[in-house]
Image (cartoon, rainbow, N blue to C red):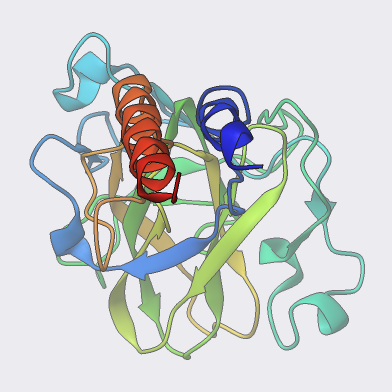
Length: 262
């Protein structure tokens, strides 16, 4: 059996795919985004712009950066027909249900988003859904991201809204809810810092008496967002490491053989 050990180790290191844990979402604050991350303030285009579309140059990003587009919700989703059940106490116009279709895409038939002023937000202008301050806002990214965050509000009730992250295949990755009042930063990152977030949705989960909007959208690729507790997880053993393990096992085997009585 001992003679088979090196071959088994090399096969496991070189041939077998590592077991990957499912991606989950971790809440983060604004300081998690590095200076290289993208940021959209909604002052880049005139007030009244409907469903703004941002190329990297529009927000000062590199040519290879992420393009960002907006609308009410994703293909495969609708406004809830039973908001009292899906968003208890929330306005029907801001309550979204359904699973997005793959590949993730914005629904042209959904209520529009638009840039507008907001006297309750010190960094106005903001992006609102339709109707003003009472509609959902969905965001589609051209590249899969590690982390996304935004200023949401003005909140008059805790646990009234959420940002929900979706993968490119439409699967739900997780969400972060507002916990306080006023303007609150809502941010999330993948637990391993990997690129998995293709879209984000800001919508009601409960009552929000005075409405809601977003501002100062931040987003980052792997390495541009700090993961709480570490930047990532160890990858599979590299080729060089596998060769070294093979060599070490051979030396161990030889010592065992030499130690046996003749």
